[in-house]
Image (cartoon, rainbow, N blue to C red; front, side):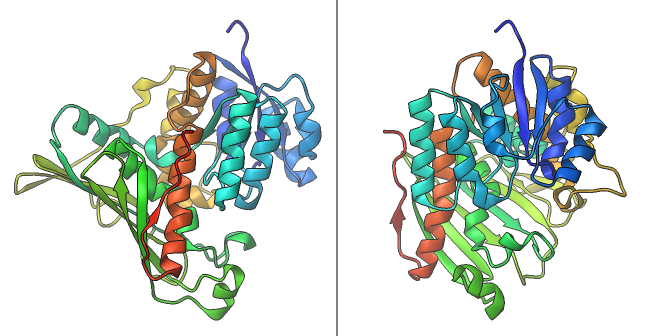
Length: 367
């Protein structure tokens, strides 16, 4: 590739975090931003000096100067906008989840294959410094043989945009599903899930989901390892946490119980608290600084940062993997098949909860 990959960023709430990363990346040019709110569009584009501004997504997709789009819009728009971009010949990075129905997952898989363009789901949980460190512990033998994995994502979503209200917990489960499946080294092939507790009638009426908490157990293809995932969105009193725990025969990594308490590595029966290192050294020096800081400040924070500690320094890693997969003409780490599987786990988990824990096979998206 002799010229920079030309990127358009769509959605400027959380998405604004990626503008300086693409502007600084040695192999990209951030040529356009898009936002339906014209005033927000002007403010962000002016702040970062972005030359092209779009309030109409279809017009953006018709621009031949754009090679790839990075979508950070509300969940209900992901599938439609992804398919449209792929059909327009653009590479696509999209925030999670891929979609909220199996039909939409299949449509994205089909569109990616027809177009020959790259699709990557931008799952922060598999590029946090915690995940990268534990992956190293698995690969160097410290953990030993993995025996069991547990993921959790508990977050109070009151005050977020209206489409979140009453969302089934497992429809937004990839932050918990992704790290355990990635460490297990396989895709989920079945899930069973139980719903627990109740949310208010008002919340339950939005999507027909009554559960305060959903807890799923997954089988992993070709592996004796099982993984458990717990998820809550409303009316469950708990400090925000996205976490995973890995039980091994030599050592177990256990996520800290409260923010700042410290993660624990159990070696045999001896617990050891430790600090997870940063992984900026894996990145081009031009974007390495973005593992530790973003574009927001103390007076102007996106909720994902106020609650989530900046997604564990994952943003520049995600952008770099997306860009390099296109340049190197290879599938990205979270490719269209992987994204569909991780997303389908949540969709079918909720269906299993509605069926009082029925075991459901996850569709095969590889064919």
